Image 1 (cartoon, rainbow, N blue to C red):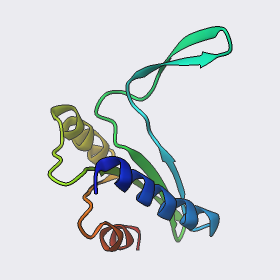
Image 2: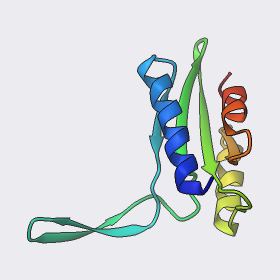
Image 3: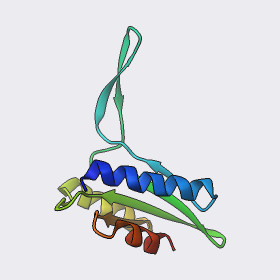
Length: 113
């Protein structure tokens, strides 16, 4: 399973959970791209380089867990910027997890339980 397929599978699972009212999630696109609308074009800037792929907010009693998920295809590794992002968010008491295709569903269920 490549990273794009993993992102679709994880997104589908998280959307189902959000529809049930269990959590909130959103994708965090990074980089820059050109958006075309009719005859107009504009440059759009996403999140900073190294930002995790997905943000999840999950209520636990009266508190909320802030979880960042970095999705990797088989054999994928974190970049230097992704490692720096992990250190930054963990220093702010957020959680950060790498998700790989092998056993992704069981891993994700364990993270969210």
